[in-house]
Length: 456
Image: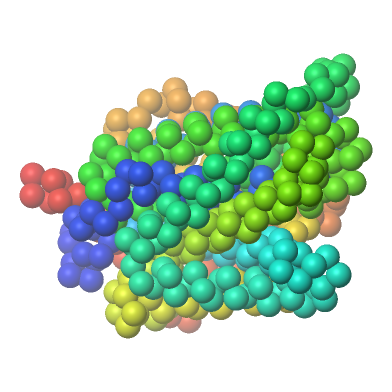
């Protein structure tokens, strides 16, 4: 691993010697904002068809898995702070071979897919709020493309602007959701949550791949390493605070929704179940408030995903996994960040030309697979990060079980989605192999050491 310790002038942007533009609070809000996005507003119906009224259990299990993975991410992020986030960790753990390239490419696919999916969700809520439920479907695509373009510009301005914008957006969303969760919990009907109505445990576990999607954004915190103040201390804090808060909020909302509406009502209003649950308590005003919160939340989630995509594309270009144009002229700034622009255009194409709502579980399953591979890589780096191998093993086992149960359930109930999952995984390595053949470029590993490491 000695080759990882060499520092080149082109790698300074990824180094841990950051200018400290993002504070602990800013990183926490970026993490929460990325998680409290489209998932929590659209998943209740889909998860309810599998887990019934036990969706809150599914959110709890998904949150525990996310916390275990968050521990791994926090240890890696504290030891190897970098704007390249998981990209650099994967290369550190596996080297620069084709296997590594496929993992990195798969992760890049996941970020773009999630960005497009969240943007489409924004388009749904924005269209209904601005133009009404009878508006032409094309407006959903227009709003989705518009929000990606707008937030791409915000990310080009710089990390500090991203942090400030995210804090404002997430603050508004959290005030609405926390108040709504408390109001629902006070008035729930306990009989609707009776364990006797729950489906078998195999179905509850199968729904975890869906509910885990709502936590997917915690990985975005890893990409703040290059901009975070004192990442060694603040990376773990940001990870635990954002995940812990989000877990409690999700479980409270799930209990509230399924304690207010029957499972059948939740499924019938799958896309707007959270807003519909507001009707018995706050009436039409409540429905509108939740819809507005959804617009802000999906805006924040899109913003966070683009921030992560910016760091990922830059790191991949520097390591040779993407064409050099993705890393040209520096990672940020009005004169550069071509990687972000290209990635945003790809996300817009997906949002406009494809129905991505049907593959929410696919994106989550791909992410789970990547997290399994990152955890395996972390075992090889554990002596450097100081992570507990017992906790890493628990993270690996729980995440693997979630993937296997999802694969079993999907193969049994929706073979087409299972095939798409396999094709997506294989495609990542095919694209990586093709690019290597075309570029003939020798892969390099971006330096991600901290200033203390370099001078100590």
